[in-house]
Amino acid sequence: MTLVEALAGAPDQAAVALLGGRLTVGGVTVRLTEVEAYSGTGEDPASHAHRGRTPRNAIMFGPAGYAYVYFTYGMHYCMNVVTGTEGTASAVLLRAGEVVDGLETARARRPVARSDAELARGPARLCSALGIGRDFYGTYLLDGLLTGPGTPPGEISAGPRVGVTGAHDLPWRFWLTGDPTVSEYRRHAPRPRKS
Image (cartoon, helix red, strand yellow):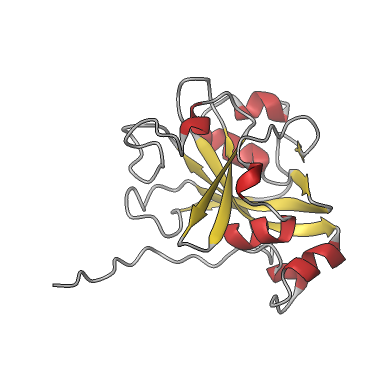
């Protein structure tokens, strides 16, 4: 199965197909080692499209193969690959990767990383290492920026998604088992409300 075919399928299947794929942006290439799937409206309360189409999430409604980039916590960019069929929102968050080309550029963008394994460990760090920002929103990825095996190499693990408040036990986080670039799992901890 090609990556194009895989991305047109269900989000969890598309997520698995992205593992081991390569994303090249800004002079850096990462091999994807960890991803999270998000379904469309209604069924997945952790999805940005849960409540329907907005100007922010419109790209999630397809077609597949485009970048959905968003700003979070007032300081970080994260990137999803849009999946599924046009008109139905779904995407895969790119959570971590191994820098396989452009190592010096990635190190310059992430000088606080204590090791090369930490350069793109976590979705915000991955975007930082690649130089991805708001202007990357809507970029078509399947014309050479994103390439993949379609069938990932090695053993794959699955577990709950990281830091989401809804559907947090859904095992839609996938990673290459034992890879040192995979981020640490942290369950969402709700902040106490001020009275």
